[in-house]
Image (cartoon, rainbow over all chains, first blue to last red; front, side, top):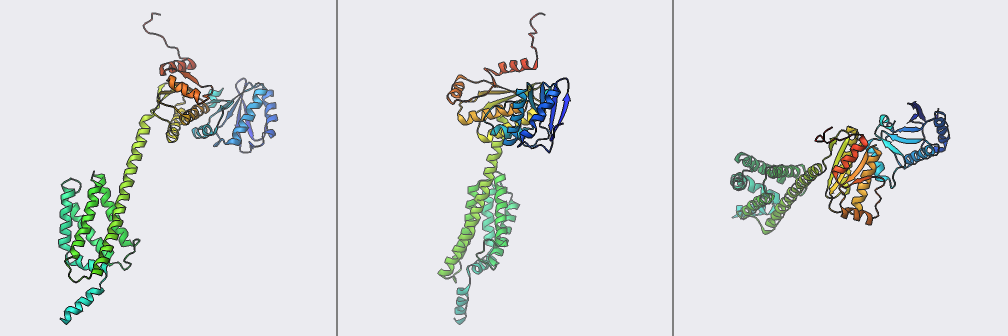
Length: 112
Length: 299
């Protein structure tokens, strides 16, 4: 288990990450190594990051998502962000000055 | 002679309010009759107000005006009596505007009311020039405030009409349609300014979520010119579509628009572009795994 997030294996090679309330996106170093360990142990090929319970993606949270994506890329795991709410997408698109490095899917089912 | 002098002295101490109240009391029938008649000529003949409405308004105006003049704080524009008179004219002007009446006519009607009272001053031989001046100033002050209020109401009504028309125009100028299961089209016509982008994006992202759209075809055939602001909004929309998990396809980019985009050094990212909406739809079918067959071709 990794503190601050709920990880579930779905299907043969995918892992679903549901962030919990205890997650501090400002401290990626507290989670990344443990997350990498989990993904490798699970032989994951894909990490589905579920934003369903995330009401706002600000600059800090976006950097956290990029940090998770960076880790996944290095260990050969594709990261897909799912369930972004319209208001979150709207605000994030208005602020971004780059194409997000991670893939996005409408929901977890489509991200698999 | 002595009695006449006494009256003269009493008359000289009367305030502008008292003079007007006295005039209105004595000549109420004649003044309201004249005001009513003019109201009939303007509003009844124009089918804006009925004969009964004009009569009711005339009576109410006279009552409210007398109440205002009798109020102790004579020049107090925040008094309840003055507010009641303002409200009366606000309601009347709103009704006239809603029924297609002319604001200029209404203001002329207000000026006519004022003139009727000024003319009546001339009939009172006991008023001194100083009292006449004060009374004229009082009338001018009250009626000017009322006319300003009426214009404020008129402008507010105009603004709300314009806003409603703009909202309607925005609504019909960005029709988002699901042309295939999971495929939305968004034809963009005209210019994408900040407020329109906001409306379009809100609607579009909501539809992506609601219809669980996989592909969004943004057709810019109707965009005549593009500048850095428009292209910035276009990029924002493309990004937002991608974040929602749908694939954006930009169609209908005319050579002039393409040239402008390269001149502006705009990076559309990895968005797919196609020349026409039909080509974009083919691309969407390709992604969705939909195969089209020509029914005329024998199997």
